[in-house]
Image (cartoon, rainbow, N blue to C red; front, side):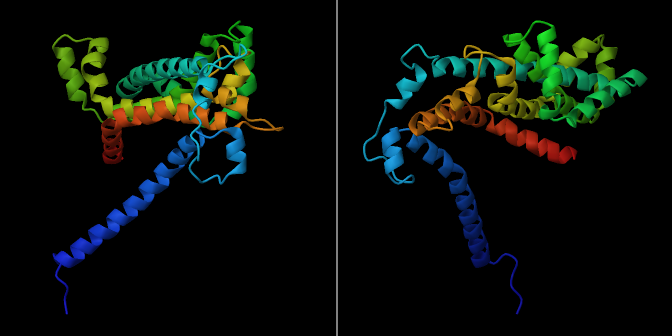
Length: 287
């Protein structure tokens, strides 16, 4: 007995199964964030003496003001938060713009030197941050940029460019040359063609790069601790370590800092979620 392809019962059952699976994955993704926020409303004593998965019997709100503006002259979390915002935004802007400009040159200008330079950038993808920590420190120190914002931003931008240039070059190669040629016939130069044609068409890959770069910069820890001294220039990952130590941890404040640090990432994702979907879909079509 043959089963009809458009059987409404089978269609309903398949939809139910799909929704159940999607709901399970959604709960698995949301629950850790929910648990993290809940723990930030517990004091250290309550966290240590009660069930770690339970809701707080008494909601403790003092963690947030104590972390944001701590007493005793300690640097407040608002300083770390502001530094993270500053580093992430500047790094994203420079990486996206420079990667698109370099990708335009590598994809549309057929010179021997461009192939050589492009190959050097591709080699940069293979380098891990751990393997170049000492050279970066020596170079930043030798030019007098140690413990400065510029000394932090330049390595961040440089480390983000290899993968960004690779993605932009591959994307721009698929843009028809006729569009650029028609613009040149109308009198547009290379810069005008890039601003009016190339850069707007690269919105999907640019948004994808912005997400990757923002997240990587926001969560970066090793270089921040290596290139800065003191708290005034440090970012959020360095602040989290303040409440976690080998001799004891203030878990309430620790979870509070983690909860605050997650908020910008979530906002960034929800604001640009449509662009992220389009970028992923465009990358799949190009592949």
